[in-house]
Length: 129
Image 1 (cartoon, one colour):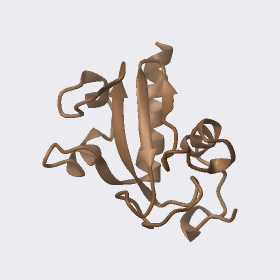
Image 2 (image 1 turned 120 degrees about the vertical axis):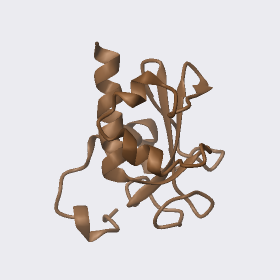
Image 3 (image 1 turned 30 degrees about the vertical axis):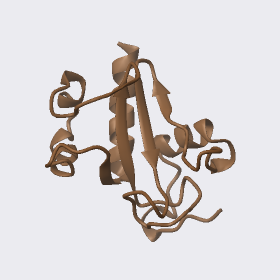
Image 4 (image 1 turned 90 degrees about the horizontal axis):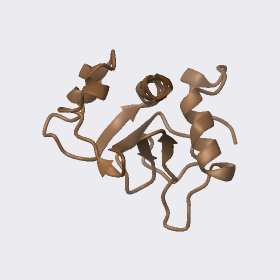
């Protein structure tokens, strides 16, 4: 499927997109209409996009068709409060995540794919140490 935004049409796939495709064979939703979470050690990233999620475009696209997506972060199966957790506070772009979550609500909506990719790489690094 062709990418839906010109910004990255000439770039290789981001690691987050590769991980999403690995968790979601063929890039499609599970039986419940959601994308499967990405698991990194104790962390799970639920990254969603559809007509009912906080994403751009707000449509039912293939997993790699979004500019921004909705994020829920879990640690050991429990929702992870990004305002309190030291693991996310050590993320160099944490302020950008906090800006999208000013009311401390979950999920965090309209998170840019580059930011999701950087968070994924950060959590991946933490699981290796």
